[in-house]
Amino acid sequence: MEKSKQKRKKKGEAKTRLGLTFAYAASLTAVILLVGGWCVWNYLSTPYKGESRWLYIPTGPEKEQIADSLATLDDEFGHKVFLILSHAPRTNLYHAAGAYKVDNGTTALQLARKLRRGNQTPVKVTFNNIRTMEQLCQRLGTQFESSADDFISAADTVMTQLGFGKAQQIAAFFPDTYEFYWTERPPRVFKKLAAQHDKFWNESRMEKARKLNLSPMEVTTLASIVEEETNKADERPIVARLYLNRLAKDMPLQADPTVKFATGDFSLRRINKKHLEIRSPYNTYLNKGLPPGPIRMVNRQTIDDVLDAPKHNYLYMCAKEDFSGYHNFAVDFATHQANARRYQAELNRRGIR
Image 1 (tube, rainbow, N blue to C red):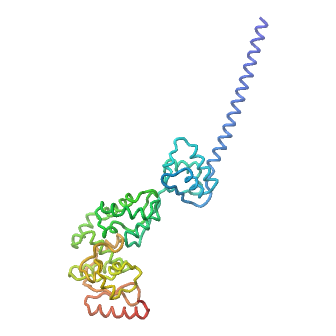
Image 2 (image 1 turned 90 degrees about the vertical axis):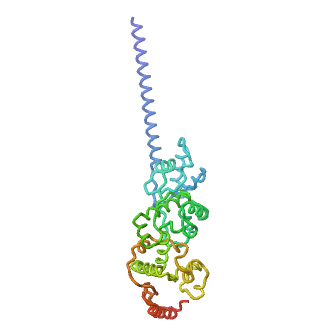
């Protein structure tokens, strides 16, 4: 009986020691895991320190391309992000293509998640002072992954599909700032931008154009001439009505900006007789009516200036001789000639050829 008690006692002590050993091992494992987890978390949550930067990763990236792009931020920080991407399960590197803004305080884990999901940061695309589709494509090529050549190649096909002829394509766009993803392809970019044109030409503006006996394209073309004629916003409605008066009387517009457009030399400061003789559908000295299309990309406000142009009887205009940027207006040709002589004399005095 005594021996049986002793055996049970030894077994109990052995179980206790074994339990303590397991508990100690479990506690040690938990501590190791906690410390290890804290170290890993601390490593991954170390924030990017520095000014905001843009990270660009090309479409269809290889691991080396991603690593190279990340290295442009900071070698150590980029290495952390790359390690997370390399070891994360089910990571599709194709999704990483895009532009991402990395702000001060962004952690490696946060950026890696964005790259894994392809959560790009929209980029602001701005363009203004554009005269031709080629100029627009060149500008877009600096703000997207696609090159200027890519945009030029897509332009004719896409714009024809949207109903814009070669000479009218620039009318589909308004100078402004837009948001896109950097990887957006040219056809989609053109379609999104052209959608703003359709939105702008609502029924109210269409009705105003009809009352002027002009199509929206003709209004835009006239607005482009007005915008080239004067930089003074308060003068544009007056200039718009002057040209509307000329159209109503079947007079040639005789707009110098159209002649400059016909030459292709946008640096011209003075239009001479040789320029007025250029054979081109854009030369409104030789051709009555409006040219085939706009001579620049037009601001929305200038189109409204044409649609809402105030009534007056002016038929002639000439830049003021004080070079203020404003114009002298005239109802009759004799007054216009006097205004023109003063301006020509000042050009000669300043040596402008």
